[in-house]
Image 1 (tube, rainbow, N blue to C red):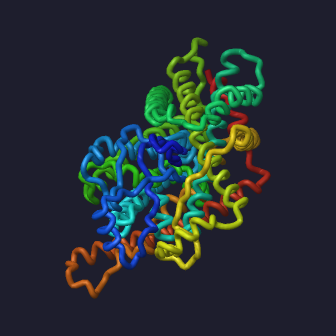
Image 2 (spheres, helix red, strand yellow):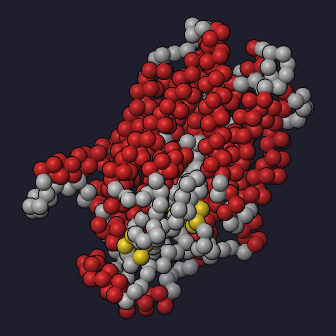
Image 3 (cartoon, one colour):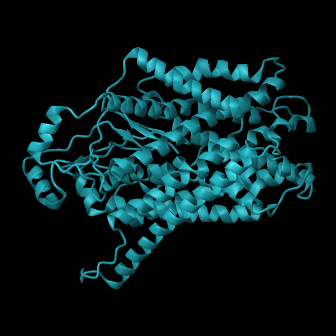
Length: 554
C-alpha cells in the first residue's frame, strides 16, 4: 500500500504504493464555509456566485496509479464536464497495481507456514473482506453528504466524518505502514546482494554494500522535494512483479516436473500447518498483499460513469487477477521449495545455472526488484517527512492565528466534526516547505533510521508480518467499517416510506458488512499481534534465511 502526497506546487499530484503507487488525484479540503444544517442552501449560493472550491495540498492517503486522470470538485459537486475518463479496464489495472507489490515476495512463505489448504482458504477470505471494504468505501464516497462536501479522498472522508482524532489514527497507521515498507525495501536490496555478491565472487560485506547502495541511490532520491519524476514507478513495479511471477512459476513447474511433488525442496511441503497458530502467522502476510483500500477513492474518482455497479466490476476483476497471481506464486513456490521456502522467495533462487553460467532470468528478476524498491523508497520517506514537519509546526505554534479565529467567528464556522464529539477542526492545512538544512537533516534522519532498522531486522517476513497484523487490518478493514457506521450507511430508516423492500435489505446488508469488518479486523489485530510478540520473545526460533544456500544444491 502507499500514501499519496499532493504536490506543494498544486500543479501535479503524486501518489505511491507502500507497497505503493503514484496517482494524479486532487484532494479537496472539507468545506467549512457553511453549517451542516443548511448545506444545500450554501451550495446553491456558491453556485449562484460562480465560486469554485479550491483544492489545497494536504497529506493524502492514496497510491501510485499507472493509468490516472485528474478529477475536480466544483461548487462542492463533482465536475462532470471534462471529468474522469477512466475505463473499466484501466480502473481494474489501477486497483490491481495498488494491491500488487513487494508483499508478493513473502506469499510462498505464508503458504509454507500456514499450510497450502488453510492459506488458500485465508486467501479467499481476504478477497471477500477486501471486496466488502471496497464496496463500503464506495458507499461512503457516494453518500450525499460526502458528495456535497467534496470528500473525494480517503483522508477527507476520515476527517470529515470523524474529525481530527480519527484522522490522526489514520495518519499514525499509514506512517507506520510507510516506514515499515521503507525498512522492507532495504531488506529486499540486502537479499539481492546476498545472492549476487557471492556469485560474482566479490569479497564485500553485505551490510557495507547495502549501506553504500542506500547512500548512493536511496538517500539522493529521498532528498527530492518533488518526486513527480517517479510517477511511473508504479508501472515499472507492476512489470517487475509480473516478471517475478513468471520466474517463480516457470522455475517451480520445471523443477517439480523433474523432482516430482513428493520430494519438493528435499524436505517436502505441508498441506496443513503443524499448529493452528501457524495460520495466524501467515494471516498478516496475506492481508498485506491485498492492501489497496487507500487507493479506492482515487480510482473511483477517475472512473467514467461512476456507479456502485461499475466499481463492483472493477473490484471483481482486480481481485480475480490478484488471486490468480498470488496463488501461482504462493502455491508453486511453497510446493517447490517445501520447508526451505524463505521469507523472501528471491532467496530461494541461485543466479548460477548447473553449468556455472549466470541465469539471466534470475538476475533480471532480482535487479528489477531492487530497482523497483529503490524507486518506491522515497515515496515512503516523503509522507514521513511531510507529517513530521506538519506536527513540528503545530507544536511550535501555541495557538491559532488571530486572523483565522476572527474569520471563523465572522463566518460562523462550526469546528465540530460531523459525527464526533471532539473539539478538533476539519481543516487540513498545507505544510510550508522546510529550509534546505532542515529538509536535508530530517530526510537523513528518517532514512538512517530505516537503514538501521533494516540491518537489525534483515527479514522482510518479520516486517511484513508486523505491518500486516497491525496497521493493515485497521486502515483497510476496521476504518472503512467505522466510516460507514458513523455515516449511517445501511441504516434502515423506517420513517422513509420511499424505500423499497429490496433497498432496505441492501442497506441492512451494508451495515452487517461494516460491523463484520470492524469486529473481524479488530480480532485479527489482537490475535496476530499476540502471536507476533510471542514469536519475537521466543529465543528458540531460528531464522532459516541465515542457513539456506540454494546454490549448494547445484
